[in-house]
Image 1 (spheres, rainbow, N blue to C red):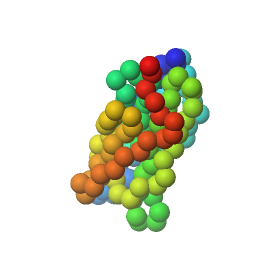
Image 2: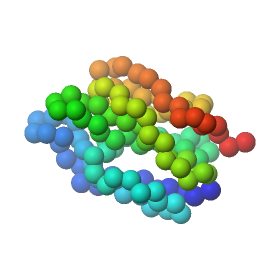
Image 3: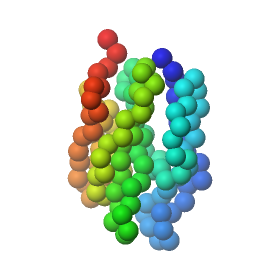
Length: 120
């Protein structure tokens, strides 16, 4: 299983005066999938066994904020991308078999790419 180290660089406002930031993503470790460098939120979560790493990427449409959850499966070395969700993700947590997210407007949801089963 490939370990992935996640770090965020060059944090800056999404636009002047915005409470939201955009960052560059840097990955290190045994497995480094090819992902876009810019356009990330500094929000991340992991499954307890470290197999799944959840990241959040901006997906703006004009002036409408949105995001996608990007999941790295370090065992299969696959990348899963969610559909677009509206709003700005402020929190991402692992919850048993998927990632739960909360937006800045206190809306929530879940992303569970299939098949997404913990190591066992």
